[in-house]
Length: 185
Image 1 (cartoon, one colour):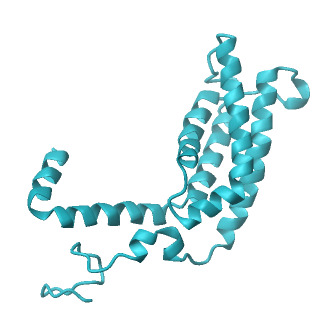
Image 2 (cartoon, one colour; image 1 turned 90 degrees about the vertical axis):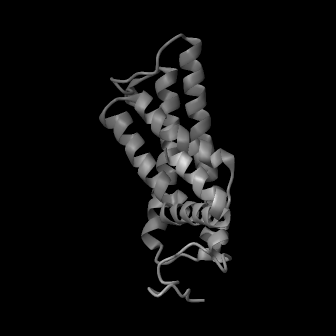
């Protein structure tokens, strides 16, 4: 139903619809920065792994974050994130991939309960790979956490160049129009 509505609107207001899509996508990009996505994701994955013992849930949380990172940066802010944290996150991802490949080669399912054993008490290569991954994730998390707490303002040009350069929009953006219908330029 929503697709039909968008298709119908696009027939007579294509420019407006295109602009609205860009504005909404870019507002989401600015509202949820990679630092915040990774901060939340690493907290959640840690809880799932070490609190719940659910390695599969941990993977379900981490995989989309890594896919986004692998897809590449679209802004200077995202490029800076990759440069700053990419080393640890990539090293952790390599451990995770080795873990999943090892589990598959042994025809084992990824655990949904039971978690991982303490690294000091385990000679299990699967557990050791997960601990190595979490050493890298912890290092990245600490640095991301510090960066988030120090961020007081954002430059729109580095977070969303599309919004920064958007001019003469037909889409109504709060603060750019008056009730009588005149656009504020």
